[in-house]
Length: 253
Image (cartoon, rainbow, N blue to C red; front, side, top):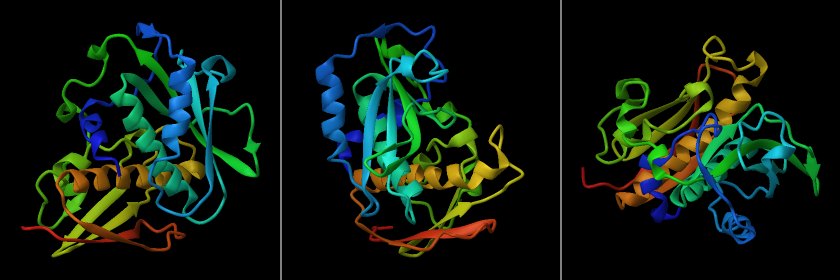
């Protein structure tokens, strides 16, 4: 995990439209850099992935974004969590370069499959001329109270920050239970709480969201210089509370 992404936690936001935002041109070199930087991102699993960057004009209802990053992957266990983890690093990287983003779950790709890899999700982005359009105060964002997503002794610089991870329809489908030097991370499933999400897509997006959440969590642990080891659990059930990862951490408190 790249520690230089940490400031983007506070700066990033979901640009639900770029219509009234003054934009700057994104050069061909900048696009090439996005491709190359993606290859350096940390994966959760050994799963083959690829990105394609296309003009926003090629995507229906692209919210006036200049470009879209399309994420493709092998279809195997944990591929959704893996794409969420990789894609959130992309979000952090782009934000750090004044490029606004939107995870765009309803976007339809122009090509469904490349090199035997299947389309998963896309991210719209535009280069923002004035950084004033990015988030000014993350702590004003609408999120669940900490006691609804964390149980046990809090970790300074971690517990209160990971609350602000982004998620589809702002469902925040995660829960962390700390027991001494272990963090038990759960994916929460509630088919009755899904916003505008189709019922049959709730688990699909929840799993991507858990990958996003782990990206926030790991970045905070790295920033606080807290060593950790992850052990993943099988996440194939549709029960309300699904244990997904167990962290072994080493803290001074």
